[in-house]
Image (cartoon, rainbow, N blue to C red; front, side, top):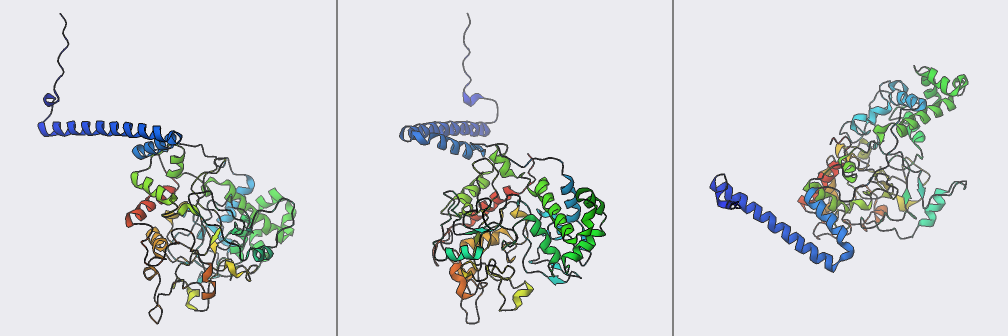
Length: 475
């Protein structure tokens, strides 16, 4: 007669006593957690049936670090470079185009450093002998392929007369600025400057951006476009110009320079290294990576409108048509970072870098409501940079986060004191323009003495998340 064998008691399972008892406790604890989750989930489903998918997704994310709602990102096509882009690549790395003969585009925009500066200097040195200091740290050239031209207000329709920026800016005076919150879609840019290249948006295209350093006396320091053309005529790739544009290109110096810079712009648009979208965050968005608990907490704080509120300006969600997020709204802000005494130009107490209204762009110099505003950069690969903000005043993400956290609540920890012992808040903006500084968006909506928006642990977690934005993630 067959008989069912008795189940072995847990106490008689193989293994040593204490270890065995610990395993039993873990099994019981796990079972209890599952029961609690089921009961809680069931109760929540009964009370809030419309939000069950959201809660289940959050539970999956919490337990596994996976994205419960993966998407397919639409990246730029990875195809062989065109002949024009290949020509632009040679121009990009050509040091002979500088007055010193030792500086190229890549000297300040290193491909090994996300096309930003390779060092921690607040400004780079150029000129005929590479001894002349610049005024701002070079921004990254990465992720500019979707950057629109500089504008104020809605984009003009095709075939419209180009807008008068000064007139638009005058119309915008006195209009309330839209509040930026990570909780809603990016704020309408109706009365906010947006787009453009450089920290002040003075170039509208990659082509225009490429020519500017060639003629800047403290960068590649050519005296004129004709001088650049003369160097191009002696470049080893001149035959490629002739093949693309005809032999007569050599007879028109201005056209030769224009086509050379067009080629540089084409190289930046076509080469995947300028917009790789290969970060851990991209992989997470597509369901191919799991975030750690610290990275998950950091992501939530990054997107929390009452905490860091980073996503209010550094948009973190894909577009409606699944283009990857650029982590910038391409708008301009006056943040009031401290003056950087290491910039040689700042040794003159009368010198101020006011961004949109000067000193390097002059068309909006009279629109003082924009003085102190600078372009919001992408945060992609920001964790690899060694200098931050338009004046390079900070060298670590921790310093950057402390600025956001303490600028209003404890300004004495951010700014120096003047000769009278008073905290010199916003000491890099003249007093008459400090009304332009952002006090509206969190975390800048707090007052002196208020608790800061973020704890030290919050900041550590946000930085952990920002490291997931570095390209080159390997699964």
